[in-house]
Image (cartoon, rainbow, N blue to C red):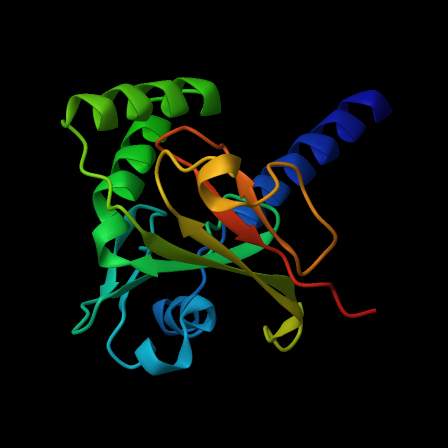
Length: 194
């Protein structure tokens, strides 16, 4: 009898954890925090994507400028928002589409590489992405320990064509990730505050 009650309690606890972990934040909070990734000059008119009450990816706010912001995915444990120039949207949207189909990172990379090379997928010759991370204070819902890193896409660039190293450098130094591919990008990762 005790074992049965213990199993029931455990099952209930597990269900509560699953429901709590998929709680969708209000749209206003998603917009506010997504905009933290957008450069100040573009915050007011940036388009914002986020999640509706059922957890579906949706437009939370239409934009009037060249920036798009992504709210943090409530299915993920860690808080992370991003913002990028609208010219990068076909590339980003294709990645979301392939991920929704259950494709792995490598499969997504290879599919987009082939599609960019064939001209099927439009990739700008340069575009910026900002990634904003931090920790959500459980009581205030404010973002603590904020951190921004920068990605500058320059497809098919190499170490030789840019003069940049192709391995991670000390924090704050630029380096080229995925050189020679459609996803070649300059990474700038500022040092974290202690």
